[in-house]
Image (cartoon, rainbow, N blue to C red; front, side, top):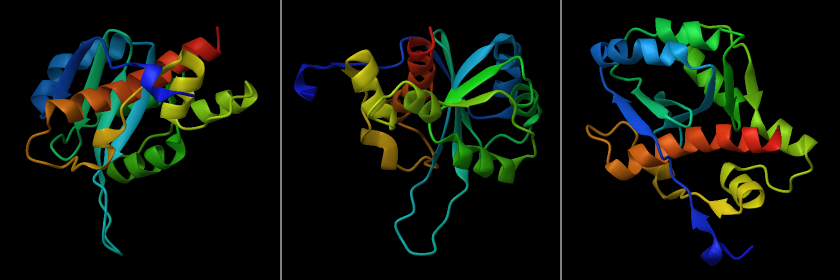
Length: 181
């Protein structure tokens, strides 16, 4: 596929960057109203043998809102436990097994109604199992993967990092909706 002819997609809604428990509390009502989310996490990349970092960012998004949560700055995880354990709320992402495992190191929850997009893609006979490849194959568009290996624990996230994080969560839900009409 010729990438030069593909449109770039990026999250079109409102991004809520959450740095504190107070900021989380201010969007709690909005978070709890959502019945379907694209789901993703970001972890600071390790470049040295033996170097390991905790998951730094949790992203939950739908068409209207993306909630980007800086996990190293938030202490109250109850709202996420409520969402993650709610079987009525759909959570869709790619390669989510490791994301869930890493999140469970931060706080305990029993995941319910998480959908692995790669399983849906395989069932539909897709060739690509990565988010970017699926976007190209299913939506005839592309997303940037540039900021993937940036420092997600930086004192300040760049606008590019925040948009990338929102897009990565949102596109999973968008793909799911397209693949499961």
